[in-house]
Length: 125
Image (cartoon, rainbow, N blue to C red; front, side):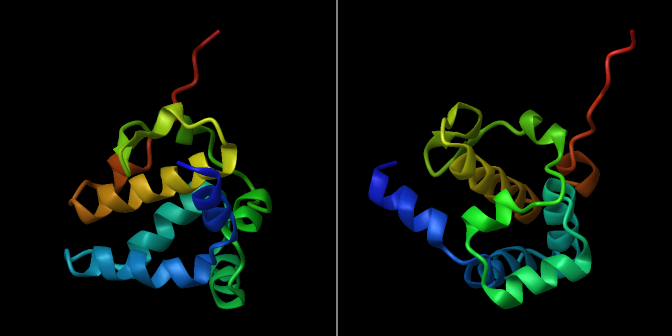
């Protein structure tokens, strides 16, 4: 990804992309509640906070920088999105955006919510 595209992604509004996420999953029989659920799992935003972020058209950069608690299990998200392996992306904000894209793709493809929301298995001491 070139610098110009990265800058565009940083500045892109969550509020402008959110309806596209909804359109993608609802045409496949999934729901807004499921979209919100996986976004909340990823970021730690509450339903009210997420609605506010979408309404205020917060940039992806601020959305992820201000996320209440990014889920540690997001590091378990692997695969290709936009031709790039998400686990190999170096820029932290771009990687978070692509993690979210990957989760939305999985939801649209019919993957079960329990599988999308990867469980973080703690190693016993």
